[in-house]
Image 1 (cartoon, rainbow, N blue to C red):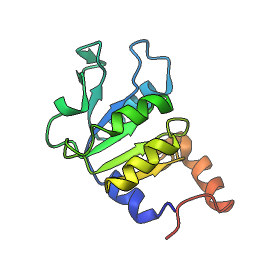
Image 2 (image 1 turned 120 degrees about the horizontal axis):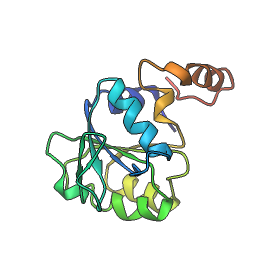
Image 3 (image 1 turned 90 degrees about the vertical axis):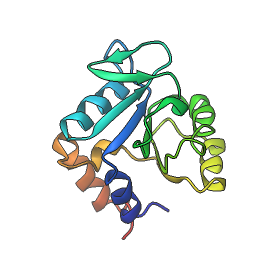
Image 4 (image 1 turned 90 degrees about the horizontal axis):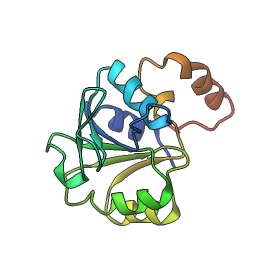
Length: 150
């Protein structure tokens, strides 16, 4: 069950990595990169094919990320999430956020079995402050009882 304390712990990490940022800038991963940058996060991008996207250094794998990165946002297809989370235990990353559509039962189970704090099934932009355009969506989820518990 998702708790508010887990969301707060994840968002308390100021150095994050994002996997799933497109070079074209037309997919949701690029929006996550842009919005989290605007909110003051220090972001690294995991992308095996390019060196930089929008001024952010890209790393070919999780293993190459700087040691200060403690949180990872996945905006990739579920099969890629399954592969990427297997790199997390050796990296020093403590938190993973699987955007809606990135999760798979195998990736979730791997995180659970390897003591990786996991948020899944939620949009990070609904919780990262200031909320901006996702504020109404966050309020509505709370009203419907779909948000994190205390």
